[in-house]
Image 1 (cartoon, rainbow, N blue to C red):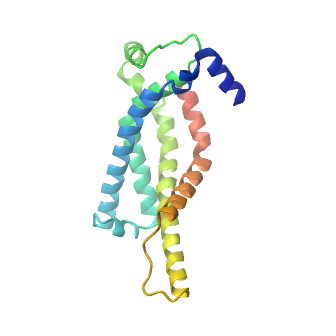
Image 2: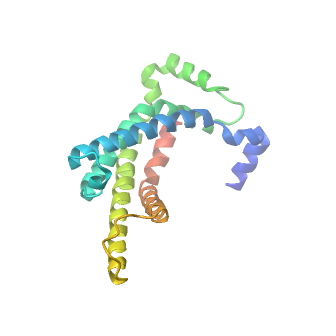
Image 3: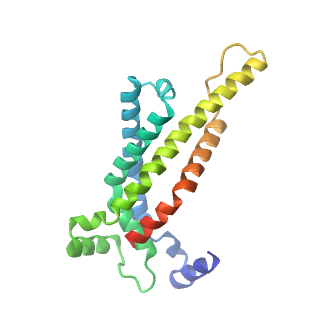
Length: 197
């Protein structure tokens, strides 16, 4: 990692570390918007209610399936930007594509519109377990934390069950869920990146 950092800095200067950043930003905006919209719609359908407090009561299986489907929808909707980001970030010197536009035009002219979706299959194979685990374990960790809060509040003779989670508890649940999903699915991400490049 240190050697790669030195090489990037020597070959391209400080700005080399942000190569591929514009398509990354263009990817993350629709990806996140699609993912959370679809996730909310699926959970609303499964729970029969659009209220977030009813979504937490979904089974771990339904949380996993909702997350996996939301991840698939978001991936398909934003995939060309992911491909461009990977291509731009992985090229060395001399650059094959100096700009995102030149990469886009070359892919379309040589491989057609389908070229923008090269590597989509392994990406979907990666995103199904990743997004499913991320959202399924996040909901599970939130339920466990809510149960822990209820037990703790009953032991301290507080009145009523505490279903509210603190920001720190939500942070820890998200951290644990993301870590679990990435640990399990990282090998699939390596295969996807290799296929894209």
